Image (cartoon, rainbow, N blue to C red):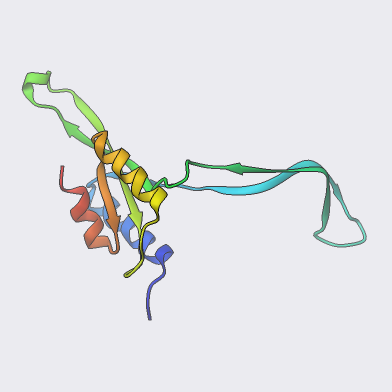
Length: 132
């Protein structure tokens, strides 16, 4: 049975946490409706929204599924301070492909010095994040 991206993402989160190669968070996005809500007493679990307005919440288009940081120790020439380097993973199931917005975002992040890429398994994710 083939794994879903969600299942692969959960395996990656466990593997990255176990190896402590980075600290990652799941990027959540969504959309909903806002307005004045009235409960429909005669219909259970039903509300009416007066003046309904749709809104979207989350991150920019193309943002990776998982993001966070790696803590690195700077060389003695840099006073031994620790820095957080942005880390990201785009989770895809085997055969899954990125879209143009994701490719553009990945290029932007790499250009800025971030570590990460596309991961199709927990092992691939850990390897990507160990490249720093």
